[in-house]
Image (cartoon, rainbow, N blue to C red):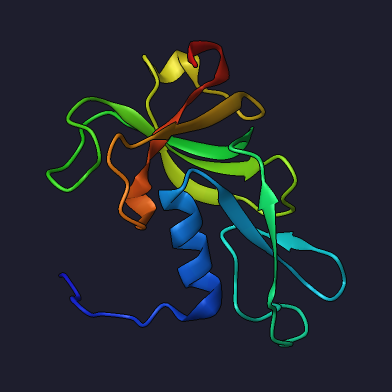
Length: 137
């Protein structure tokens, strides 16, 4: 099943995607000081609106992962890869994206990764082509 829809971006998500286009990762800071990446428009704990945006690093640590040995047509790679949760340095939460790793043995919780930027960026989540092990960058 596929659900096709459009969403208006608003000031928080719009700024996040514009940042990606310019190779900067923005996160939202809640009133309590928690840094959420990707940014949210509302604090998930209090429900308060969030408008304070801060830049976080383009590298971080894998907090969880799963290996995809047989990619599907809509996956980002035509070769095996991992879906990873990455907590970027400076953030208190993790974001989901693809990790281009040589094989499953090369992936581990806690490993350091960094963003591989797409050559052409347009203000979309795919401006992050994927994550890659930090040693390869």
